[in-house]
Image 1 (cartoon, rainbow, N blue to C red):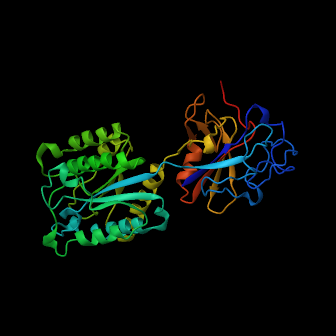
Image 2 (cartoon, rainbow, N blue to C red):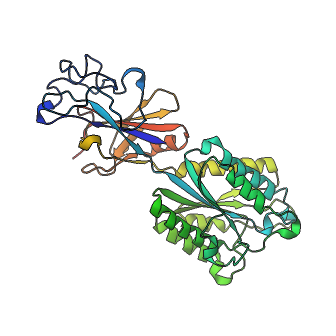
Image 3 (cartoon, rainbow, N blue to C red):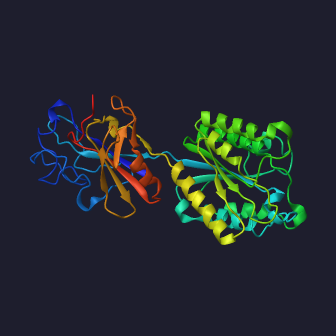
Length: 393
């Protein structure tokens, strides 16, 4: 999702709103409106998008008149591009024998591995995943599984979605026979390795990073360093660095003597800042795939950041924090104005991170929920030629 930000092109003291006019006739300050020097001042009810409501998300191109800023010249509007913080999902995917080795009735491949894999492949290839970037790390590793270093390089590097690379990697790791499954669940070490990978990655590619742990059971083998408490400690460390951990627990199918294999996974999710684990019941392949997709959709939405950094004004110009209008657009639908409310008491509102010295536009919870649920969402932010909001003291 992108946000196009228009910055006020007001001139020096001689070109304040109301002095010299702001655009031709009554058309306001919209894109393409010529500066005549004789029209009335732009008002907050003017058409800031010009004819046809075009948000003009294409970059730093002028959108009105000459864009002049000298004394006596009209105020025009110019756009700069700011992007909502990109989201990176680092998947750690359990490929241990309990997922489908068929050595126990509740390790039935057709009831656990096959439907989970089908749903996972669908997510990575889904056009609605566009805008996200993901990596995929399988565990246990085929070598030295009780070392975090074994998981610092994912099996699929950070890749923009949708992509078929993930399906190919899953097919490659899928055992051909029941005897080919890997044993052990070194959860603590895959979390440690994945977090190390994220730290290195975001140094070059800033954004919002989250860990998505997909597992069907408690940590096993690797001694005390691989207990639930050890995993909790790892995800708490990640959360301190603003990396949340989501947990998708793949439950055993409801067959006789099947043990509870996922209850303690809620502790990991809570320590990772995401409350409860998503528990996926298995036994019905269709229902399993649907539940997995629902969990992924929720993770996809909640991981999306609802802050928009305010970019530098083009051509060395400055912005006025009271001359801002924010709109929300879904796909090709007309834009909807969002209300400025620093207290976030109104529905469909936004605020500044710091009203005295703002650096980010922050969507309030109700607005954020709408944006997160809409893969076709975009924000239009226009810095107008006169005050349209009032900043509280």
